[in-house]
Image (cartoon, rainbow, N blue to C red; front, side, top):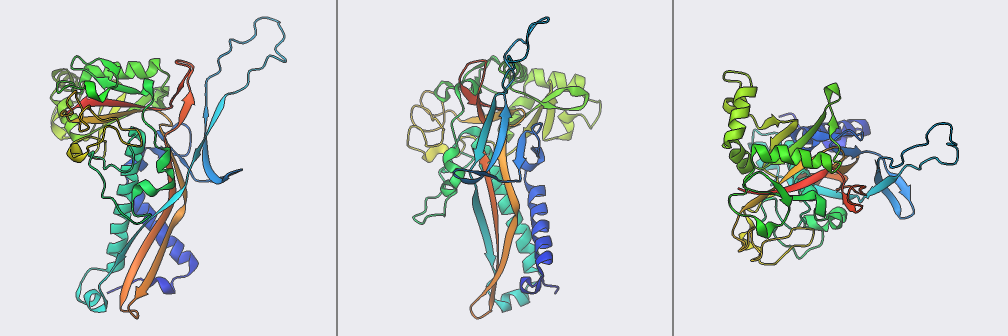
Length: 388
């Protein structure tokens, strides 16, 4: 059995192993598909730190549009220049770690599985999965004390055993007023209020078209694609996607606009479909209330507002809902600092082996003062609640 002994690896070899781990983790991470280093990415990844008076943090800059009308004719321009309005967003950093440990030499000897290789893949999946969960909770404005299905995460009496202990957990904020919407049964986009949701308020083709118009009216900037067209990304739960695919208007448009035959998205079972310049993606970690039965408080720190009865949505707290996310450029800021730190250690006089991985990163939903409402709003994401 070919084993890798971390203790015999040089610094360059160990770095290559860490880089290989992070490549696997990134490939398995859903949210990383939408990440880029520039302002034309839905998730702006920051890989460098900036020194500030409060220490070293990761920062991104949001640039607001100019508001002046310029100087006409031969009138003097000098001294009438308009200052650019930039909003710096600081991202708190923290480390998340996972580890595996084998029972002992005999257990390792008896198995045909390469412990280190299998451990790397298991750790990579765990890291990628938790980053995805945290990213969608951050975008949804839901505290890390909840699972993505609305259930409470297990509480721990020890510090550092909960995702809510992360430094950037306190930066999770509820969707702002103009960025929290609700879909009605008629397909209209109205102010978001979870206690007003009824079972008929399902995602539909018309609601997506109306939502795109609302986003553009409220200066949500799309992602520039080929032909200089703006593209938006919308994330829905499998149940929301199922409801959309049963909508007669959606069926008619996809049937007529798509290619004929088995490759049509109605038959191919694709997890992503394009609707009016909006790419709709199905993902299991989009926030929903399927597991929210055990929540007994009216509201939860971090931004989630529950129904009147403290569970699910609707006037009596009995309607399951999901929080779809309509995203443009710079919807989420992600600090991705350095390679993961991988350590192998032995226990019980060298009889047991363990491998740990730690990654320093941070997440934050950018905000800025918009000229449309004159208030502070989420920059690139609209939270859209629908029944399912």
